[in-house]
Image 1 (cartoon, rainbow, N blue to C red):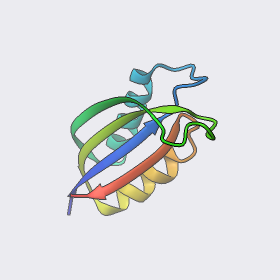
Image 2: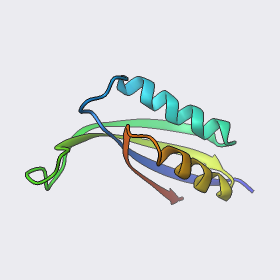
Image 3: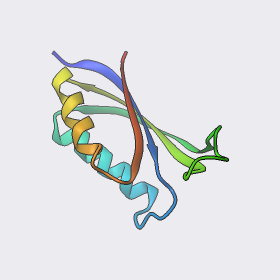
Image 4: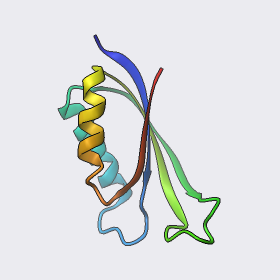
Length: 95
C-alpha cells in the first residue's frame, strides 16, 4: 500500500559540474524509477548553515519532495542517493 512521504534534500553548490535543475531531475527520476508517484517539488532555495564557520560547506540548496510510495522504496532510494556526492543530506518523513 502506497503511503505519503516528504523528502528533504540538501544539495551541494560548491564544485558542482551539474546545475541544480539537473540534480533535481536526477532525484525525481530515481524516485519514479523505484515506483514513487511525485505529487509536488518545492525549491526552498539556498540557505546558510548555522555552523558555517567550522564547516567545509557554508551553504546548501534545499529541495522538498512530496510523493507517494511503498515503504520499501524509501530504503532503495536512500541507499542509491547516498552514493551521490551532489547530495549532502536526505531525510524522509511519513505524512
